[in-house]
Length: 106
Image (cartoon, rainbow, N blue to C red; front, side, top):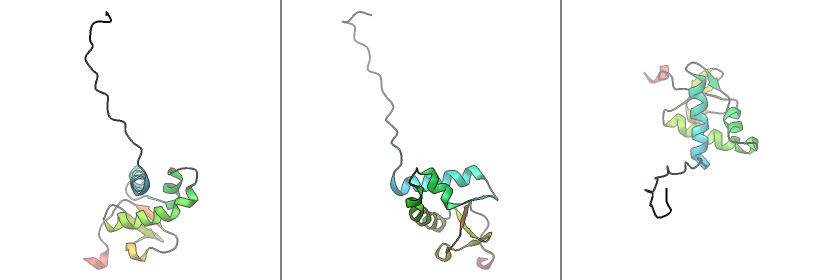
């Protein structure tokens, strides 16, 4: 091709920006519970570790995101293997795909 021949401009796909902040935490939680599958759960530390090497500093953000996602019905928060309301999530918890509604809400 000669230098005086113009090539059509190629369209480049927009750069995909990595998620940051709350969105990154949401994505980490949702991806992990989806990968684990129905009837299985993850520990919040797994989501924090997926966010990078300074995972201990991200545990609070993971717990806040878990509560927000549970309030939106996207995940369940489990305590001792039983689903709990997001406002009651204290101590050791696990996160899972949503299941059926709580029996006392039917």
